[in-house]
Image (cartoon, rainbow, N blue to C red):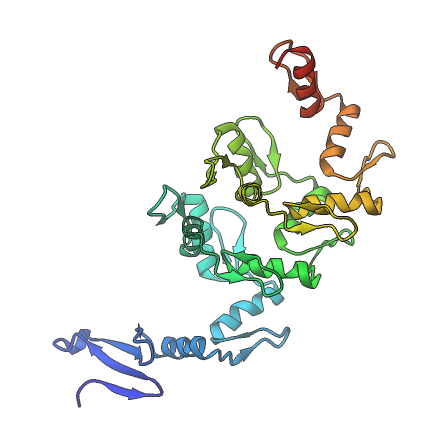
Length: 332
């Protein structure tokens, strides 16, 4: 017997033949030469290659390559979260998610980018980040020409075509294309803003929103245009800016000939045709086409004037009024 065998597309060999008591079996998939320490892992790998998903969920239509994956998925239906964090009250459906979460407490970020100083808690996050350097966007939309750096972003995008909004608010009738948007919306009911800025005491519903806000204080603008070297706080702002070089305005109004660099700008413009004013003031009957207009209006009630002139110390309710003041009165 030569210590190896082949069956059903994989072979088994003994590693460390000179010491059989300490020998470790390696199971190799013959089609791609990948090796695994367990035969069950080879079978699961084969299903990934073939597309076979023999473990279906009885509650929904999802199916899985391995029974353990189905078992974890079923907890999303049952609500079971058997892996609690010892530091905070959060609990998780599987041990690997708990392990990643614990890094938020320890500060550990073991996955480092070779091209910049950024580090990440997960290998998958590093993989997606590296595409910002390479420009790779391997997940294209079959309906339009957009492509994405990861599959989850494509999945959310496809809902703009299908109209699917699977995340529903329990307190009102609103629904959303992704969970994070629902979470932000729910804070409008609860008033919960758990993430606070150390510099100015502003608080936010999401940690990511706080992180973006902190760039106002730090001046960090990590997204740079390759053509003119302008830099931006947000990657989405960089993408919009890049349209100005190509003259591209991909979002067109069906009712008139205007086109826009951003979907959100088109949406705001369309309200000039429909008359829709979805942002209502709680203190009076006025309504507005944009959230930013409502925010400025609300300062007429609160008396807040956060924009101050450095020359004469007058303060204003909006940045544009401050700019006009500087042009007309202060020679700027």
